[in-house]
Length: 147
Image 1 (spheres, helix red, strand yellow):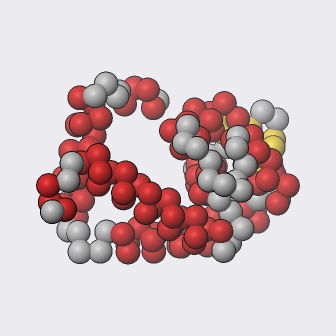
Image 2: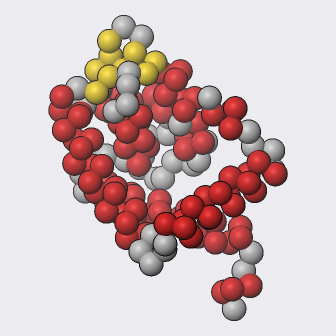
């Protein structure tokens, strides 16, 4: 009786399935999910190492999939080595090659997001997000922690 399973079951299952989809799809393009997250953040503006780690800490608190670098610094080092990211002073920035790659990867990720929410109305999606935010707040999370 799937309808009687608790929210934790569904959260873990969906998170696991999202991770599997990301890993399989992004691996074909030579990038990990954590590297995608770094690229996506750098696509908005340059960031220092501390800013990157702070913004993405929930993703780096997870256990790294087998075969992936274990630390954020290792993921960033691979992006530097690939020429997708460059260091300018204390900040990291996307290179032209990185920007082009980010654009291609963004299309891929948007496709995955569309498939995962197929059959879900915008109202249902919004309600789900609002509900999860409320539950996180009830459990002690604060949006101020993200600032």
